[in-house]
Amino acid sequence: ISVLKGEDINIPFYLGGDDYSIEFRKNTTILQTSTVTSVGINNTNTTVNYITHTEADEVNNVRILNTVTQEEIILDVEVVTECIYESVKVTFINRFGVLQDFFCYKISKETIKTKSNEYNVSVLNETLVNNVPSLVYDPTQHNTITYAKVSNKSIELNTGYMPEDNNVIIEELINSEYVWLTIDNEIKPVNINTKSIKLMTKVNDQLIKYKLKFDFSYSEIQAIR
Image 1: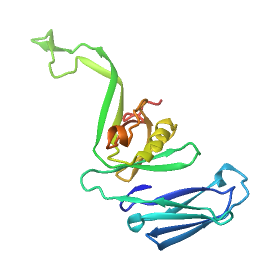
Image 2: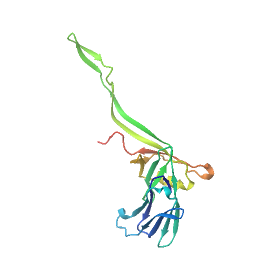
Image 3: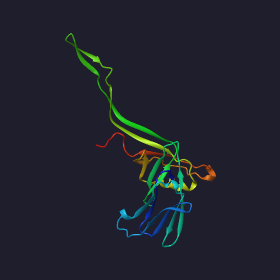
Image 4: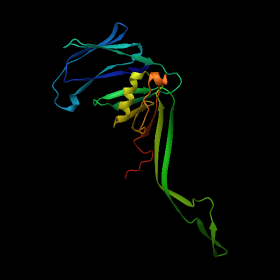
């Protein structure tokens, strides 16, 4: 798990399965213990429980114990401190139908694109000179009128260097139908514009990082009537 310093760690658990004990740890020192108890699933609102640890600065691993089968999983946690760029949190619904967080740490660039229709109008003003009508061209008026303007923004994010096993996150992200970005503590719905991406490997590319483009899922100018 890669998480920005000061952010929360969120781990989803299916409530229709076994019981679990979750330990957020620094090495072997336990910082927080949580439990998940299976329940009967009556509707989709009670299918998943998110276990959260706030401000994961001290955590470097999470121990998950299945208290029924006694199987154990250790998740490594990488806490990233980004001092130069404003990091963006990407939240998407993965293949299991749960929310998953992913951080893009490096430079981001926003672009705005507009389109509109136009028509020409007369800018002649009628005046009286010695009681004689006269037409005068007014250069301060718009001769071309713009209407039905639509404005949309897009953003390009850079992940920063990441381990190869995080490629599965990139795969699930570009296949997700629902994606949100958290920018300046504001959640914005987006559609991923990146349709094709070359998955990198350590053997072929040494250092792995990705560039992703998103379109904001709303117009800057409200066009819905």
